[in-house]
Length: 239
Image (cartoon, rainbow, N blue to C red):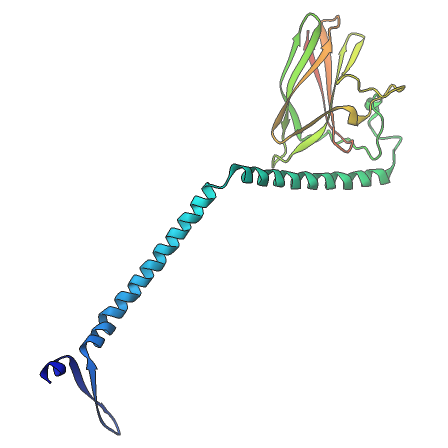
């Protein structure tokens, strides 16, 4: 009886207007409430935190081990979506141009060599392109003009268009790329130029036949994909 009594605690509860009440509680249960329950709660919290860290590491490891082909497909998908958006914007601009018709006084008389296109505008006053590293190399049978088309847009958005280079040495005039004149016509369609697309820069090398003279004039002309004049620059170099 004494050993059983030693394992229990007894107490009397007094309340106003109520007779005293007698309670007994096990010492083991009291220890569990005071020490066991907080310890168990702490262990659970540690397990949950450790599990969260473990699964986070598994997720990072899985991302690192993602196959290269999947990443490549994602990049190609993003590029395709961007190209689709650009095509839609070009389509809308073309529709607006066609609705304007061809104007006789366009302010682009120096482009008489090129066929007029509906709604063409001269946007070369504030170009988003510049030429760098311009160099002329004169050989025994050819003259090469090399330069870089540099993207000057603020957000480095993708630039696309058609490029022409006209060389004049004395009375000799030549257009690059070759074969751009339409059949039975002495004019050039803007879409026959050298197509380019760049987000940063694009190197260009235009080759012409050798012509007699001491100095060569080159006119670099760039049209947008919808036919607007977006850049023009005259380059004079000795040969």
